Length: 215
Image 1 (cartoon, helix red, strand yellow):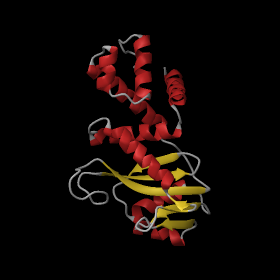
Image 2: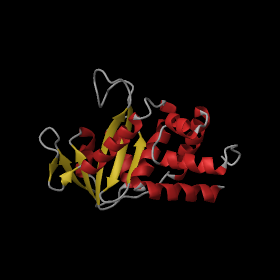
Image 3: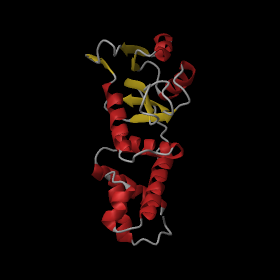
């Protein structure tokens, strides 16, 4: 990026378009820049965000956890076990930040170590009724389940926050008409960054500050 032949004003415009979530194709057309050049620039920005958002977050208080599935074949089975989907595990502190991690599967043996690493003991943990969370009933957490086959919220017992993040992330990614799996982690971390750094102005300030520190 430091060696880019693009002028400083055009690079500034690219950063602004990136922050508001424009596609490389639309940005290239509006700014009259080669689409491949824009795509490469956007890729480097996503890589920068990924490298600077490997958060050492530790959650406490009230925490919602959930797993979700991205991409894959639309027809047939959806959710757990659907063909070609990428499983992602997420933790969200109510009133705070979200953390996501791509996982191999949603088994207890996969999820529990992440939960114990990221969430402080004695925290209040909210989940759905998925069997992999049963181990939390005998762990060092106060565990509440919501059975989505009956209702989606029971006063404070819900996982609406993390589900809202999943909805936002999937809606954002749909704009790109399919994301190569090898780049999925970069798009996921950008969604996490957008959620945790609320508002376009704050995102722009944060990204410019990161670029200034590096270059």
